[in-house]
Image 1 (tube, helix red, strand yellow):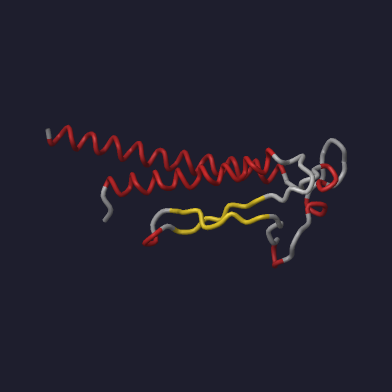
Image 2 (spheres, rainbow, N blue to C red):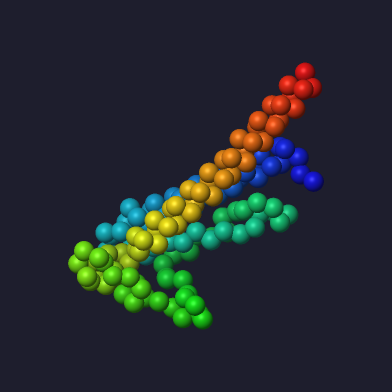
Length: 133
């Protein structure tokens, strides 16, 4: 059984991990118009002793595999709504803004959930200290 402080440490560690993941997605969005830029992907893994989450790697370039192991290019997957051109023609970097926004939203929610864990642990610890005093 983990203690309140362990829960708070895991939550704080996960917040740090997700802030790095947000930095990777933000870097991709900031370079959407940079010709030759290859988007990066944050890869997460289970933390030490099977608890929490950690940043395992930041991979450079490439589009993840689709169903059945097939690989999709940006031109096959997404079209620019305003111009009707394939994304690779609309974005010199090959960054898929739709995917980056989804990544940023999910990362934000994970960060907020872990912030709630830290806040709840802090409140519980405060209550225990008030009872003890």
